[in-house]
Length: 610
Image (tube, rainbow, N blue to C red; front, side, top):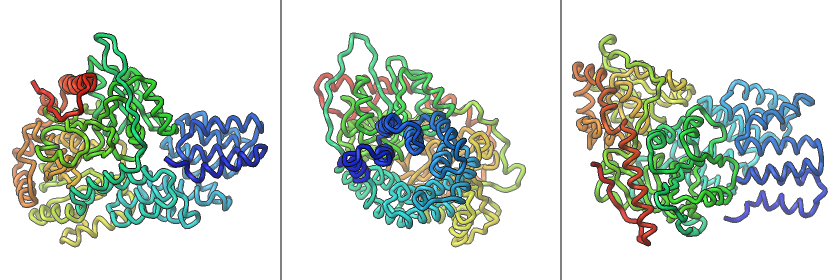
């Protein structure tokens, strides 16, 4: 990848003016912004050696520490600066960023308010970018879009703002606006592969994009990847366990963390090393770190540095668990950090990375013939490609709401970008068939009044009044699970079905009706239902979806029975059998590694289920 112009210019300034403190500080910041915070920290510390006590250099060091996930050290450095100059603009900006990263939204807004009241023009674009990020985290998407558009108006080359605006459009289901934002971002983004990944991930939600087009766009994106470097297999003593790495954007309270935990807890023949790009660990991160044999914090390191990190760990297999999700490290796998590389968990299409050999799925999610949509060789796990560990804080299953209400309540807690016009039209058919039924939708961005109005408008087009569509914003995870106590039946969106969301609904006693398509992302909930013996709730077309939803809504006895028994059914099924799942996954890893050592090419295979 070419050196970004921002970094090139900063290096030239230092070479021309080696005694200029501002040039050194600018270089440290440029290195951080261009994805190499580790080097940015070195440069900032060198600057402080040359110019002791320089406030801007202290701030550059804090910026690098933040990018590396060393948040407490960064905050301490900033507070020292602010104790001397309480309204130092750049220090306030970095403090707001840290508070936002740590989830302290109210404190972040306080710092941003102070900064906006004394905003120097040089920081205006960056401040509005951060304000947009904070408003997005709060679910206030209208204000977030305005802030990001302001940032881009002030500085059209502010690629961070462009990326965030693009993602915001996609998250709201405004696919055309998202594509236009992507085209704008490309003109300034020093890492166009990152923006391209956001686009590819988001196009999985768009029902207008057909399978062939999606595969073609993935392949075109892969044309910009760095070349692979094929490593030899590490030397192993007889009986020594395989060394398997798992690399992701966020390994914690996220679908990746929840679905990875059962493997880590029950593996017997694998040394597991986790590579986590999240800056701030959460409680599940800490638990998973304790289960792993090695943990590498990759936030702030360049792709090249992470590649070197993984190579030093002498891996037999590297598993990418993020795919094209935001913050992924696919360019590391493109360089080939391990002899065998695998795609699993948080993606549901091909990565198109030539150096990724296998993709882990199951017979339901990738039926015969669907292999043509992948550059990877398909490995089919028995039962399901996921294993679910229910959170220990999940509340007890509530009684069936319909018994108290006298009417049926449908619901969906999926991302709002899944609520496409086609989904709204189909769900409206269900609601029109049961005039007293309600629909509860819950997602973070529904805290925004404009988003609420837009969702209600979409249903009103189909004759569904606003009194029948109940909208809920963000709540902590335990409270969100408790909200399933208001739902009788969950409706699954398409073409992007629920994953963890469907598991959580089922765990809370709420059956899910799904419309299965051809892509793996359209068959996730179907896989859960087949595993649980509830195949009749998985349908193949819109008419059957309506029929299944109406039949379930009209069968109070079955709804009550499912409410009482779904948890026991899940616990008795392979979906929650971590020991069985880990054994099958280890078998797959062993087979992949053996093929490589024997000099054989990757090949599709099915893991035995007995």
